[in-house]
Image 1 (cartoon, rainbow, N blue to C red):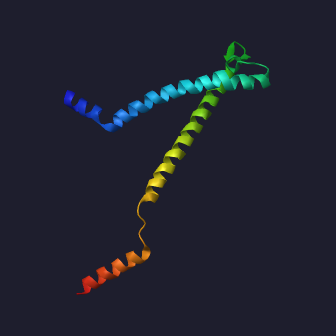
Image 2: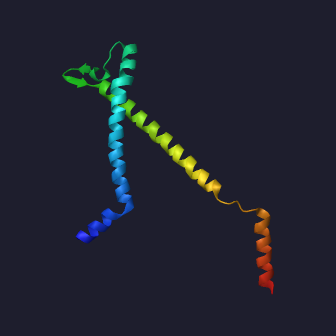
Image 3: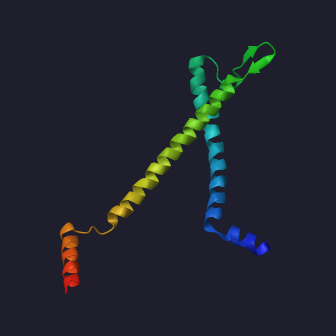
Length: 122
């Protein structure tokens, strides 16, 4: 059982996933700081309040903390945008590698097909 666990952990994709989770959590902390420390104060200037997380709507004895929800939406949008940009960058590198592959001339392909057909006729 220990050997199976060791083989499982030794796979590259499991280690890559663990690294991704760690980096993702660190990145989330950075985005939360960006939202709380930079974006919210700017939005707060226009709304007349500096801290959006304190925005609360009271309905009876219930408190609806819509300011915290706005913070979460902003965090999500920032993370989604950064992931989108990263994927675009990665895809551009992949396309460049594919383009770097030698291009086969159509006439060469046709000549090879003709050659193969002539070989088969003999």
